[in-house]
Image (tube, one colour):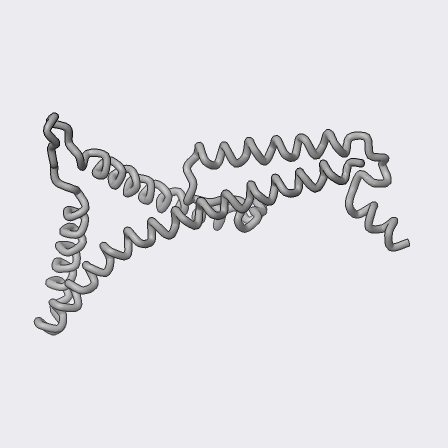
Amino acid sequence: HKAFYIEELEDQMKKLHEDRASAIFEKRATNNDDEMIEVEAAVKAAMSVLSRKGDNVEAARSAAQDAFAAVRKQRDFPVKLDEFGRDLNREKRMKMKVMAEARQRRRSKAFDSKKLASMEIDDHQVEGESSTDESDSESQAYQSQRDLVLQAADEIFSDASEEYSQLSLVKKRMEE
């Protein structure tokens, strides 16, 4: 009679993982698109300088940096006031700023975690269980929901006899 509850918990856990993966995928795609626009402009500028001036690497680097800055500046959305004096582009500017800062934090966090991982070999981490593409609040919400599902599973299986308490024991029993 517990099969229904077990299946429901499995569905909840599956949906939780799918939602998290989908949100991370969307965020990564958006970040990649934003960064590619800037990088493509910088590369085009550098290639243009190199094709005109030959091997002048310093000029190419300068052109790439200027192009990178120009693309960022285009995204700054100028002040545009409505009839009440409100800035219509303020929200867009703030959103772009927050996204850029979040990208920078994630890069820094990823770099730090890779650095720590290279120092600590004993710490086993499951691929996909950690992401630098989600905020702390998103990560905490996921953990909270996951803990609730696992807690419910513990309650459902709390009255199971010892011989069914571990998967290895069940497998051994089925093989006999």
